[in-house]
Length: 326
Image (cartoon, rainbow, N blue to C red; front, side, top):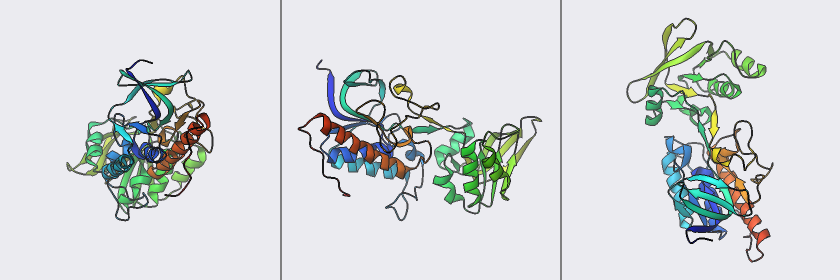
């Protein structure tokens, strides 16, 4: 082995609740984890102003603050948190090989993937402006819907997830306007019927977003246009939700790990195991159903425990720590 190749017992790819939780558990189990934070240290929650549904924060917490606390907790147990991202992997042999920033090569006994998924947005300048400001643009109704209680909001999307989120918002918001680009839903008939039969949901077919309107700080409305007539009009709203899907950050694992048709990593049910021994997955890289910080953290714990047991089975000198709740 070349002197330039680093040997690591447990490599964690990606941060966020899944990655940092995996690092906490792996570090406490004497696995000497090395975590590369990726292109967005802290993951999607760093773009969330308020987190009110994560246990242990009765007054709520900002996403960036929570991620800094999780990172500090992992470092307290001497997890090695590093800048940089994994740009290439090779899981074809007995040794799990990864490359950092196209240069540094690392050989790993175990790998925990926590690369997450990125919400798809429309790409409008105005949308991105208020997304970055935290002023009313969101891709998660379950996460942020509470802040729009008794407000009027707009949601974009036509699939099952969009219908689910619109229906969720309808229980909180005064009115939900749903923008559907085509003249019909892509969602299942039962989900389409559910939103159509909800009194405070208005569905605008053949309608797209022209611009997200605001006062420079927060969203005040949405300008839309009919893609058949090109007619434009404004809708008053304080929240703009985008539900057009997520893209899992798993491209570098193609050809090695089993992925579903969307790109989510397929894990063994009830565990974090992938089709490659010694490679585990946690968080939104595999979860296309819940996509919550607390569920991501839970799977980070699972991945670290699975990796610990894998190491113990491979190396008789490595002892599994006693399971506990502390």
